[in-house]
Amino acid sequence: MPGGQKIKVGLINWNGGFQSEQRAQTFNIADVTIREHRLDRCYYILMKVKNRKSTLLIDTNGHFPNETIYDLTVGVQRTF
Picture 1 (cartoon, rainbow, N blue to C red):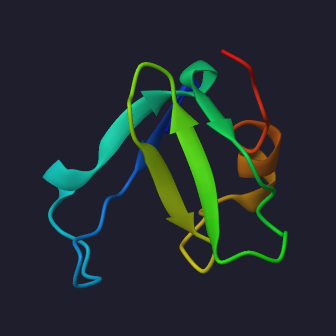
Picture 2 (picture 1 turned 45 degrees about the vertical axis):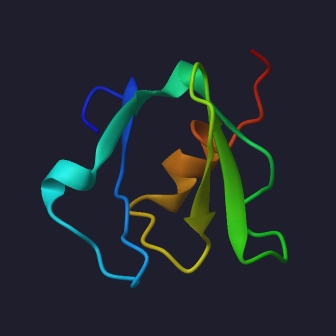
């Protein structure tokens, strides 16, 4: 998102379709950690959000608008 402090993650339903813009959630970059790199040989990237019980799965075939910025900001493993 503009400003570089937050990210927006679009959530899909179980049938694989993307629902309305209301299903997208916004998180602070400092509250997000990634367990695998985007280019590793895996189908999903595990994304943990601070103060959230569940882990989000990001499809590696998904849409990354700017891959370089993703790798330098969101794609960094952090400790909470």
